[in-house]
Image (tube, rainbow, N blue to C red):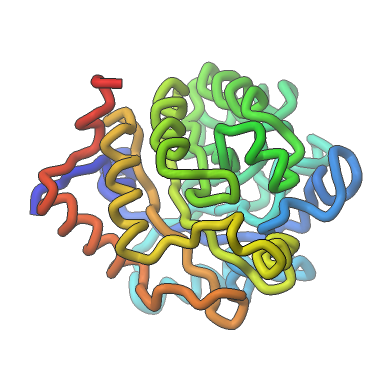
Length: 307
């Protein structure tokens, strides 16, 4: 089947020359939107249990978590190399020297060839960027920003604690250092509609992003957003799988063709979902997107130059 979008797995293998696997880490970071620095309670949708594997426990060191993750994958892929994925919460938030020690610990683990850092746009001090610029010369590195939305009203509504201008600033400062810079957005947040989501693709295309993750909105038990949905369901549009496939394709057609697409969906454990999911595994959803793109003769960036 013809490749109709810039796919992350192929890009990563071409970039490194060999196959790698991310190992998620919980290094004990918190978030300025939880500790009172910019807000309390966190983003209204947030529950980090939704993406932390069982071995990601803060009482374990970074090394222990990586070794356990390696054991899981090595059974099937004994020659695999790994990327340490600092995923949970804000992984650049804290004393810079402490943050650097954690990164360096990860890079000392055998077969770990690089790191991926998940963080917020308002948590990237120049001092840390100085270090990351140097690190980028000796190890593979991606800095991934939680953008979530380009709409300031949506960001305010989800209690994000920063505006889109913070994203623009952080992405540009990071990319200007020669660092691979990624982003993450959630499609279907309250206040979003199809038109605003398509406009988001255009705005993101103006940034020096190398990679991008798209996730559908999921309502997680115990979050403020799940409570808001129970009180005012009319404020939300929860897409069916079929609707979301077409939305993703519309988004991708309006996205710069150079941006590498890492994901289209997220999969939270069914036990944590306030509203049942689609019952599709990631690879099943991707195959449906590919098939629909063939049917529509769609491809990434097809409409990008027309806007």
